[in-house]
Image (tube, rainbow, N blue to C red; front, side, top):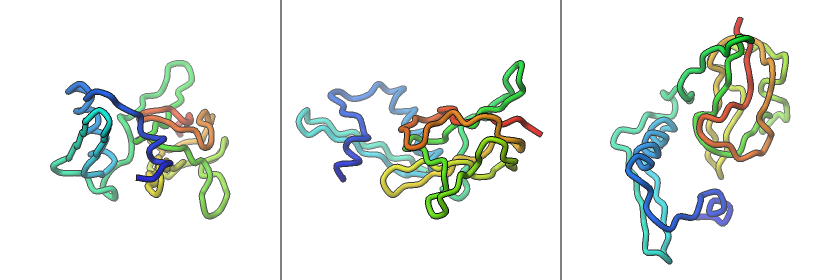
Length: 153
């Protein structure tokens, strides 16, 4: 594991609780991954989680539970489907995926999450206009973090 990866994965000195392990397995399946392994050799701990039937990345919706319009504004939050560093601009074009005022269709890529060489798209949950971008470029975000708001059509 690279030094960069080691900095992103939190140090653990005891095994997680069963419900935490279940949540990690859910995240793995949602991200289309088959396994996760965490080691703390100094404490003699190793945790390996394997998901029996991982959802293929291409078939996965790459979206956390659907957002409902918020009361008062009708805005829908775009939430991250995984954890990683937030990338709001296309890495090969240096242009924003979905700046404020942009029209997006449901399922459009509005951002990427990167973790080493892994890139997970963040998809628009609804069609509409980007009203606000709250996520900070390069920030390390967790699963389900709201990174922008869309005004549905």
